[in-house]
Length: 289
Image (cartoon, rainbow, N blue to C red; front, side, top):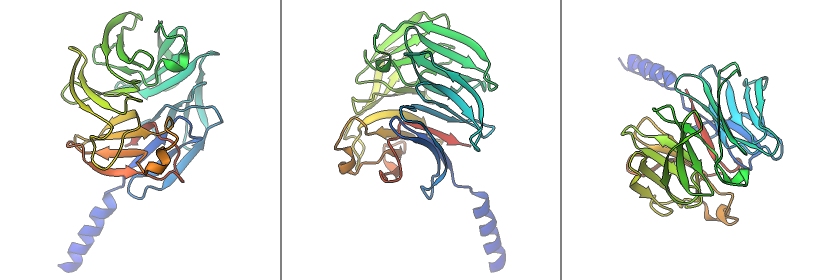
């Protein structure tokens, strides 16, 4: 019986694979895949100097999609380029994400700001253009999202707001927030959790009414301080990954705060990555299924 129990336990352990995370960040010279349990880098892809990476996504086929200021690429894990879509001169490609229908969402800052929907083969399926009223492209946005109404959610740095834009490029609504909104993520209750960048905060917001349901500030998570709050990623247990980008604070390294953390539904840190020797500044994350 003991042998049978040990065999069953061993078989169950073999079936429980450790989760893998794809990570990138503005100012980091690579994108990486880590094993969550060991926190070891298992794969990395180098980025050239100036290739600011604010979006990464792992595709169901096992490929890697990323934006890098000058454009967006889809590559294989053996570093072969499947396709590349450049951003025009003076523009910055900041968004590269996978939509629920399997297509990809790309967006570059510029005049006009431009949102593309692209097939997995790199075919441009739609193009939306709009003017943000923000002169400097770098002060426009990072991660554009799409809502269930098929409109685009554009968080804007310079104006501290989230704008809802129709596929025709028309303004549908505006929600005023704080700081430099970086990303929006839909919660199960229909609200959005919004990363507010240099406000050192994140907010749960009802974008239909503009109501701020809750705000998590710089010191509201026990044991850590929030710096520039970048991408947020929900977890299966009602929790959240928080990219705690530290590039705007020269003293951040000395504070010994994690670059990436996972909090549960009660805002308790249950996992974190705090290793400045191994990892650069993390502002983008994708879970690998």
